[in-house]
Length: 193
Image 1 (cartoon, rainbow, N blue to C red):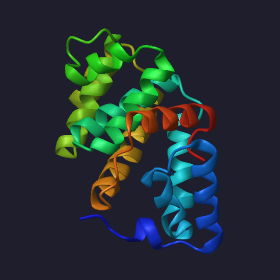
Image 2 (image 1 turned 180 degrees about the horizontal axis):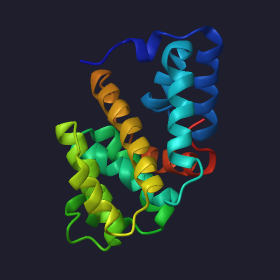
Image 3 (image 1 turned 180 degrees about the vertical axis):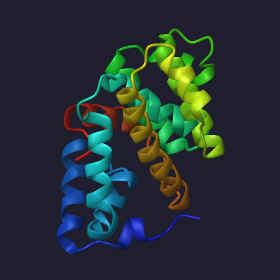
């Protein structure tokens, strides 16, 4: 059941901002964006900062790689909103939608580097079970992934495990394919601020 707060829990100035975004973009503001405006002192400001740093901060992973990680973690969590949003963004970032679809269909046969494949497997295990061990880390490191890349991937995983559960708890509405495409364009241009 959708929580009504995403439609009605805002100050008048925020409601005006939402209307302006809809008028100028041609699309309603996605629920993920609405959520960060609700009680920004409790969740929104912190979530935006953390997610932006994980997804757009300095890293040896490309933006496409990190968006793919977000889509992959979201698929493991079966979060339709985040799968759609980050599949569109990763496909646009890579300029290769087929690659993203292949990873989400079967990471083991997808056309990606072994380091990214091993990292995605590790993120899947962490997302499913809540734990990874030294053997999992050794396996990822053996592919040439650095300890810093693992930390960066874990930050993406943390951000999207949180967002996935909130999306499901608040019953985020699914945008149209055009809405996901518009969101992807925005995320690639502005990030998560």
